[in-house]
Image (cartoon, rainbow, N blue to C red; front, side, top):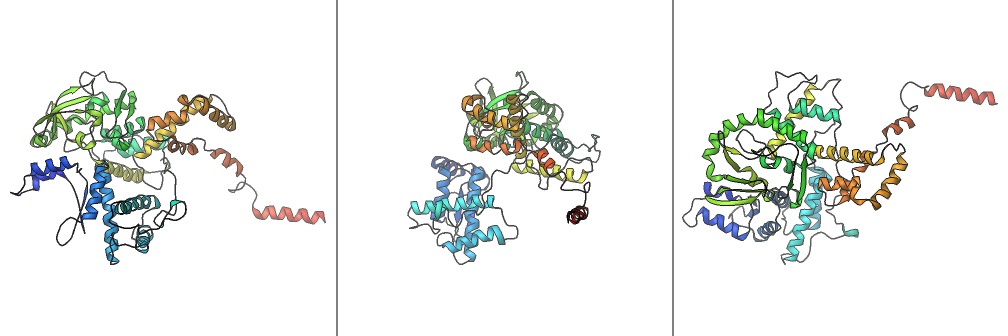
Amino acid sequence: MELAFVQSELLEKYLDTEVISAAEVAALLKRRGVLDGTPVYLDEETMMPLPPLCDYGRYLATALLDESTLKDYGRAIGRADNYLVSLQSDVLSATESDLVAYRDERTRWQRKPIGWDAWSKESFVLDDFYGFLVDRGFLAQRPVRVAARGRNALAPRLRSGMDIRHLTYEQYRYFRDVGLGGQLPGAEVDLRFRGWAPLRNRAGSDMALGSGARWREWATVLLPEIGLWPGMPGGAAEFTVQACAKYGKARTLYFPEDTVASAELFCLLERPDIVRRAARGLERKARDLFVVGEVDIAGGRLRGVLDGLVREFEISAMPPKMRRITVHEGEFGLEAMSLFVCRGGLMPGADAWKSYRHQAWNRMIALADEATPLLPRRRWRWHDLRHTYALQLLTYLENLMDGEEPDPQARRRRHRSYLSGHIRHNPLLIVSRRLGHASPETTYQYLQYTDDLIDEFEAAFASWVGDDEATYAEIASHALSGAKGGR
């Protein structure tokens, strides 16, 4: 079986047939609601679609999943089928033992086994796939039996909580200034630094930390949203994000004045040079871009030309893919309207931001010395800055509510009464709203990190470890002499 994905933008480049034009195919995909990223499963010999599997891909597209999720789901089914073929089976004729063998292969035997969190996502896709086949009549029953409490043989054996990883102030500044910014640990300029656009990457880290936004929310910001647009007053920025938010759930993002200032510094010193170098290349791609001619700041809308037609979009409803091709006529020619730009003149994608982070991590490790903050074993993620924002804000609001209350037990009693009587001002719910969590239950998991009684732990075992106290031999000798004296 071969796996492909719908990619409508490639039609004009590669579709060459007299039977049907690229424009007609694109119109047909749009009319049928087939989204980019929809998985298409083909027979290896005939290259014809495999009906049950392609029907599932079509079903995923109607669920309005984003492009990356559609591809992830499609690859999960493709991986399972490839393994099952090696067992002289496939996803349509697999037995429970076949699928259990696949689970063990993924989590135990392959060269780099995946963790239970990753397997949890794959098992969900497989369960959803077989539920679809049963509902549509392709199978009489699921191949995997449902056991007690709704679990089955494909369910992950271990259920872990959120992987909350946060940074201290020293760790963050080391990550931002040394890893991303090209400084040496002593704050000197590193003349050997071979990174690119350090102010852009520093601004990205400041925006992630200062807003608590998810990567796709802060990395896709347009200049009018952040207030860095002609005629706008500047300062702190607040706007609604929806299409780039998780599950498409609308929420308000707030970027403090210092965060916007960091982005403005990038716009003043680095961005113009990037834009100037890329202007000619963007001119050649103009027919594939959304060229904005009118910006309605008050209404939050953009009006311009796309595919030869005049179109108007609400900014909050523009998905990342549309934001990436949104440009306007600037000082040097066509210029991206996204805050962040890369060498090609358009918005950096997920892989680009991942590479910036990896390069920063390698640099941090290479320059680490005795004065360097303690670095974790695993490489930091952009999402860790969101966790740091949540913990800092939660701790600050709790301390603000508690005043000078020194007793942790009294603080906890006060939290419980505060939650029932003052829901609107409860720190936990404030942070939950700011993070855009679907349920405060998700935010609850941050609580275990706000009152970390590490000092009490150290005091409890202060005389147990180390070499400052008596050794076991001395203690035993003292006990023995005492026992003899007792006789």
